[in-house]
Image (cartoon, rainbow, N blue to C red):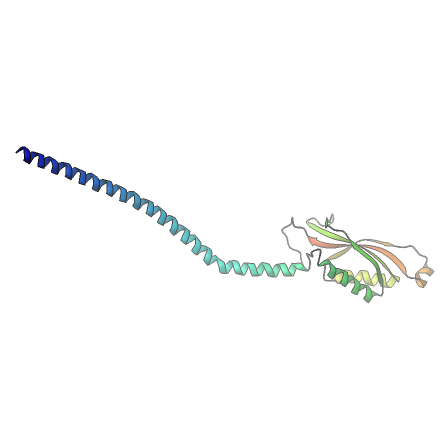
Length: 191
């Protein structure tokens, strides 16, 4: 009998140990399952986010093409320091068409804000030109028709008598403002 009771106690203890092991294993599996479910949920959200980004790619590529087209359209109006050489060539062509000579051409290193046009800035150019009066007028008429947005900000013509104007070439100092859109402004330059 004592033996029988010991066997029963051992069976009960063994059953309790097995039961506690099963409960502990169940709790452990449940916690691991919850961790995996959280990780799975996070990965699903990342996947959805990436799928949405992939769906956006065609629209973004189209937007990039539009912006590149806009940039190249505005490049005519927003010259870099290097592209200003084109302006010099253009001014030279205008001078030849007008029958005047450009004696010197200098520019400032940095653009300055334009007081007359808020949000715009300009590279200032100083030209010294020589030619007859009609050539100077023709040159001034050609400037607004050029590829770049250029304004005459100052003009000084050497004084001469009427007879001197007919005989010899006049000289003039001309300040030009090569206008460009300020980087602080979000607007567009009108064509």
